[in-house]
Image 1: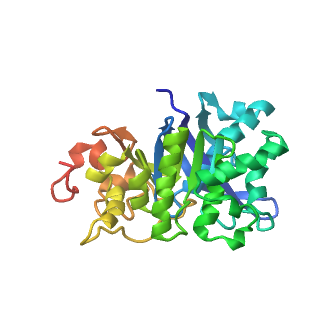
Image 2: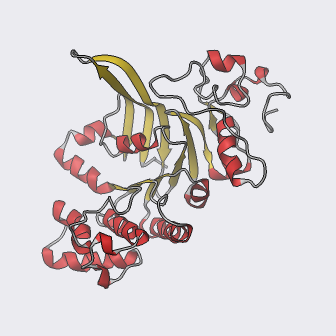
Image 3: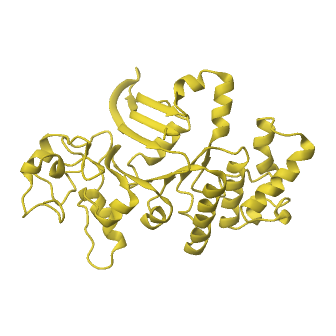
Length: 331
C-alpha cells in the first residue's frame, strides 16, 4: 500500500545569530534526519520528552516551516512542488488539518461556535450560505454536540467541549490526515477517554490518518498502530505499538515504558541537552544507564532489528554486548 505521508531524511536547523552583523553563532539541530511513513486510515504515535522536536516536526508536515534538508511526500507528490502551485496548495490545506494542545486558545474568543466551524467552508468556497448551517449542525452531531452550542462562545464551554469544536472544524473539509499535537494533555482522564473513542470512531467512519503526538504513553497505547520514539531530534526506535509494549529495546524507550509498570522505574540521568550543543556520538549517552565507550565516540545508525528500526550500539554492534551491561532482552 502506498503511504499517504512519507518523510525522507528530513532535517530542520535553526540558526542563532548575534552581534551587529547578525553572525551565526550556533546551530540548533531540532530535527536531524527523520524518516517515516503513515498509511491511509492508520495512526502513527509520536512520543518523546519536551524539546525532542515533536511540534517542529508537526509544523514541517503542515508546511508552516520549510525543511533544511530532506523531502516530504503527501499522496506521492513532493510537498515543495505541491506548495508551488496555487490549486495544489489549496487542496493540500484541505487534506491536512491540525488539532492543537490548548482547546481554548485554538479558537477565536470573539466568534460563536457556528462561525468558527463555518469558516473553513467560506475560505475554501465549499458551500452556499444556505447549506453551511446544515453542515455545521451535522458536524456538531458527529463530535457529540447538539444545535444549542451554535450560538455559544468558547469561554462558555468546558475544555472537552472546546476540543470537540476544534475536532469538528478540522473535519469540515473531509481531510485525509489530521496532525494531533498533544490534543488531550490539558483535559482530565474521563474527557480524554471519551475523546480517544471519538478519534477512533472518526477514523473508522471517515478513513482518516493521524499523526498523534503525546507524552502520555497510555494515550498512545489506545490509539496508535505504529510508534516513533524521538530524542533530541533523532529517531531512537520505530515499531508497532504491540512490539514496543511487549519488548522495548532502546534504553530511552525502556525508560519511557517503565512509567507504565508499577514498581521500580528505570530513570534517565540528568537533563536533556540543548539542541545547540548536542553531545558527540549517541546523543543519549549522557543520560543512558547502559552507555559504553563507543556511545561517546560514534553515532549509531538507524538499522532494522527484530522487525523494527532502532538506533543503538547495543543492537547495531552485538560484539559490544556484555551480560553485565546489556539491558534485559538484548542477548
